[in-house]
Image (cartoon, rainbow, N blue to C red; front, side):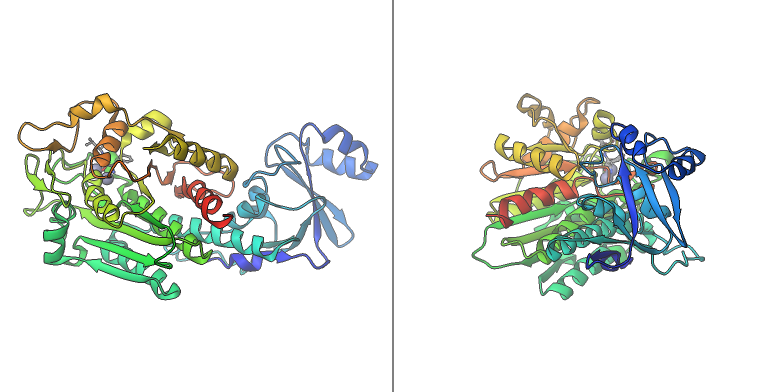
Length: 465
Ligand code: BES
Ligand code: ZN
Ligand code: ZN
C-alpha cells in the first residue's frame, strides 16, 4: 500500500517548490501581479486559470514553481490538487498561500494505485510530497482517511476468485490482530441454525467459499454501542434467477458494502472513537449449483419471520436481514449499514449518490450535514410506509421482492426495516461502491461512496462530545 504518511510532511520551513492556486474570478488580478516573463510562459502553456485541473510550470533557476487552476482558490475541495499530485514529479511542494486542508486527501489518493495484477509495477518509489502546517493530528487523520478509502478500493477491485468469504474474514482478522479488537466468525451448522438466510444464500458455494458471519467487537463496554453492518456478497451471479452477462460483469463489487463497513470500523478504531463498536459482515457467494436456494423456497429468518424467496438475485437483503437482526440484539444506539443492494438506486440517483434511508428525521439531517461537510454526497430516499404491504407473500410472512418493477430501492429498504426494531435509530446506504469513469484522484473501479460522510457524522457525534 502506498505510504501515505510520507507524502504529507509537517512544514518546518524546508525547501519546497511553491504551488500557487488561482480560480477564474481571481485570475485577471493575479496575472497582473506576475512579471512579464511569467505571463509569457503562462500564455505559451495556454494557462488561462479557468480550465479545471489545468496547471503550468514556471522555471526558477534549476527549480520550478507550479501554478494551478482550481474551482475556488479560497475554499479547497478534496479533489482540487489531485490532478497535480498525479502528474508532478517527485519532490517537496508547498502551497504558496494557505494550507491544503481538505485537498490533502486528494493529494494522497491520487497517488494510490491498484497494481496487484500488473506484471510491470509503477516504478516511482515515492511521489510528490506536500508540506502541511498545524496540528500533527490533522495529518494523521487525513492519512487514515486515505488508507480507509484505499482499503475499500483494493477490496472491491480484487477479483472474486481471490476474494471470497474467507478472504473477507482474513481482512477483518487483520484489523482485529492489528488493533486488539475481538473477532468472532460463525459458519457451518451454527450458521445454518442461527442465521438461516445467510446459510441459504451461500449454500451453493464450494466448501472453501462457504458462507459465514464475521463479527468484530471493539471498545469499552460502557461506551455507547454502535453497530456497522455491510453486505458481503463476494460474487453475485444472481443465483438460479441468474443475471445476464452485462448484469454480472462487475458483480465482484457486490461485497462493496462490507468493504465500506470494514473501512469505517478501521477509522473508528484507529481514531479511538469512544464507542463500543460492533461490526457485522455476512459474507457469502451467490453461486449456482444443485445446492442453490430456489425461487419459492421459504426460509425462517433469525428473527423468526418466514421469508419466501421470490427472486434469488435479491440476496443482499436476505443476508442483511439476519445480520441486522443480530446487530439489533445488542441494543445499539445506532445501526448503519452499507450495501450494493439495488440497481434501482442507481436508476434513481446515478452512480455517485448513495441512496440513504433513515428511520429518524433528526438522524437523516445530521447525516446529510456531515456528508456536505465531508464533500461526500448522499441523498435521502423514503421508507414509504404505504408500500410496505407489497412485500406480502401468499404463503409466508413476507416475500423478498415486491414483484413490482418500480421503486426497487425503496422496497429493498422496507424489507430491511422489517428486521430492525423501530426504537433503534438506523441508516441504510444503498451505495454503488464503483466508479465507471475516472476523475482526478478517483480511478475507474472500486470506490468508497458514503464512507467519509458517515465517518464525519460519527466523528462529529462522538469525538467532539
Ligand atoms: N447486487 C445486486 C444489486 C445491483 C445490481 C447493484 C446492479 C448494482 C448494479 C442485487 O443483489 C440485485 O441483484 N438486486 C436486484 C433485485 C431484484 C431482483 C428485486 C436488482 O436490483 O435488480
Ligand atoms: Zn443480486
Ligand atoms: Zn447483490
